[in-house]
Amino acid sequence: MIVRGFAAGSQGPEATERLPQLGATTAGLGRNPIPAAKPGSDDGIAADLALVEAVLRKDRKATAEFVETYADAVYSFIRRRLNPREDLVDDLVQDVFVAAWENLVSFRGSSSLRSWLLGIARHKVEDHYRRLLQDAHPLDADVAAILPDRSPGVEAVADRERIEQQTRKVLEEMPQHYSVALLWRYWERKSAREVAEATGRSEKAVERLLARAREQFRRRWQSA
Amino acid sequence: MRKESRASSRLKSRIYSTLVARQSQDGPLLSLSATRESGRRLCVFEELVQIAPVGESAKCVNLCRVCHARVLGEHVEGAPVFWPGCPYMQFQNR
Image 1 (cartoon, rainbow over the protein chains, first blue to last red):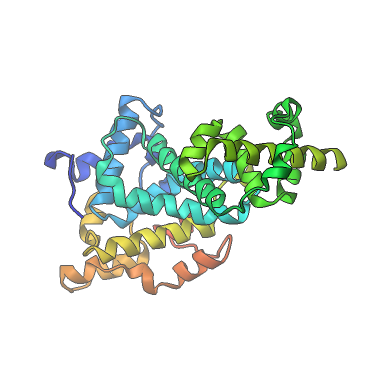
Image 2 (cartoon, rainbow over the protein chains, first blue to last red):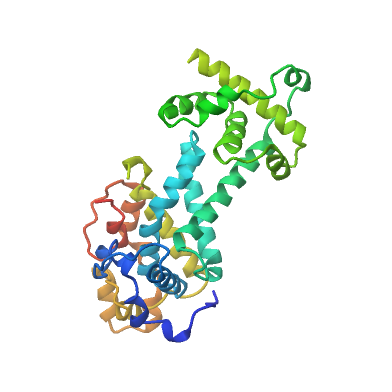
């Protein structure tokens, strides 16, 4: 892989000494613990760039540091969004890191490395949602037509932190394309139009899907 | 941070193995000598290879591929790996 975007003089020991943020968490990999830099600060960005540079040079220890430093954040981000399909979380986290490696040359430090990785994670989650909704069975228009367009009670309920567990349980019991539709609409705050554009369905079809998903969510919630 | 919001050591191990394998496919890794010079700690196995009278190309090989620590790290949560400088030890969430 071609290394681009870094000054040649920034490699080597001098570059690796600019890792205050990362050194604090990777003492076991042989780095001296140094006080952490504030994420997004100049020091933090410099540390990110130094780490990226080392990973691009195929420094295996830097690669381990990259995984150790950011795997928890990516895992947490994806796990919360993929809920309740936690069995898929590990695969998506791994996909994020592979995609990150393949695109690491494009990291310029305009944002923190953490933010950059979470941006990739967001795209991976959206790809996952998109695939599931594209594969979902077509709606029965006659049945969907008699269902209410929206259920404000469900929207309010879905946002409440204190009933997260029950929400999760209900979502787990629902057909996957319904739970994904609700997650995408209410967790990611995507509009029906955005979902329609992403999945190649009509906006009306997405609205009917959401209506049916809300209705099923409401019924399961009441019987839970 | 809640425990369940942390990636497992097995997952970290698998990700690391995958990344290093990908890096190896694209060409040799950074040699162990250069890695050591940059201030990063090698494991005992890598140290032995690094000081051995072999060519630099032998020091650019992914040694973890044939190491039992990798197998343990990828399959056992909290694997009994205690070699300083070993990434699979670092992933154990201790």
